[in-house]
Image 1 (tube, rainbow, N blue to C red):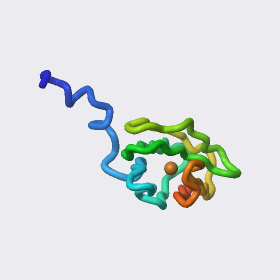
Image 2 (cartoon, rainbow, N blue to C red):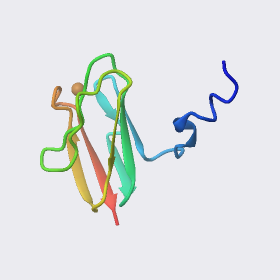
Image 3 (cartoon, protein in one colour):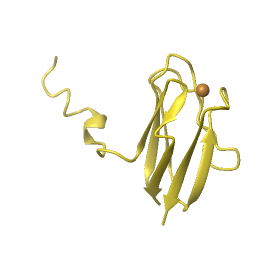
Image 4 (cartoon, helix red, strand yellow):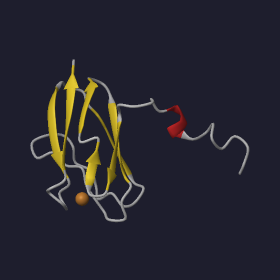
Length: 99
Ligand SMILES: [Cu+2]
C-alpha cells in the first residue's frame, strides 16, 4: 500500500456521522437524516444493483448510481425533503433540513 494513501482519501476528512447515506440492501441507511442548512449530503450506492435518489417535488435528482457511485446535494433551504429510488419506488427516505 502506498504511503500516504489514507491521508489523501476524502472519506478520511468526512464528519464522523450525519451527512452520508448508504444505499444498501435496497434501502437508504439512515432512511431519515436531519442536517443544517448548507450541509452537503452524499448518497453512495453499496449495492450491486443500480439505484437513484429522486425527490418528487424537490431538488434531488441523481443520475443512475451504479455500484460505488456517489450523489451529493447541498441543501440551501430548510424543509423536509422526501425522496425515493425511481427504479425501486419502495425505497424511500427523508432529509429534514433545519435553519
Ligand atoms: Cu433502487
